Length: 276
Image (cartoon, rainbow, N blue to C red):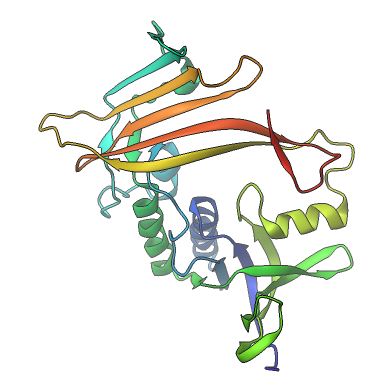
């Protein structure tokens, strides 16, 4: 077997999505302002930044305005500004448009974006700031010193489906860090390890998740198409369930469409999700 290599960094961020990338960029800004030589690394399990991000989202620009004030000048990819919006209640055979848009669903001043394109662009800004991004490395387990996280071990490569090493076996790397930040998503594997080890969910309400499907459809292009956002509620959900659908009009004859239903993790079913 190959000997396991070790990498030492000051800050390790697990997850190369918008949250992890924004964290890395802001930390680099703070370290530059304080004249600190800080080594920052991002681990991303996808083969490249954005590989596991599905396109189609509505972005409130307040966060990116604060993080990168000149983001438009840097060429950040935008599909359309939100110009029209509506909320519909569906029955099995009819639809009713709400006379007002509830405040949480008001999106004027926001932008319809391809989250995949935007994440890739943000990754470029992070790399240019001097942060190391290691794509294609999935965190397999936390490195612990008692109850203190001291880093992450990446997954071994070149193993068969039974977990046995093959001829091209390559041991994962132990990345040691003074500070480890988990930004791997709502059900990140390392986060679940930490919750179990430190009993972080003891005495707490079960976590609530949303399971859904999102696709990007090609539709006939319209010369004067506006940036519109539609949200829906009601059918096919039952009254005891929460969730709904959405449609975002993107550029180039593409539409992002999806449906989400709320789920809850039951204490009696460890590791399983049951939709409401």
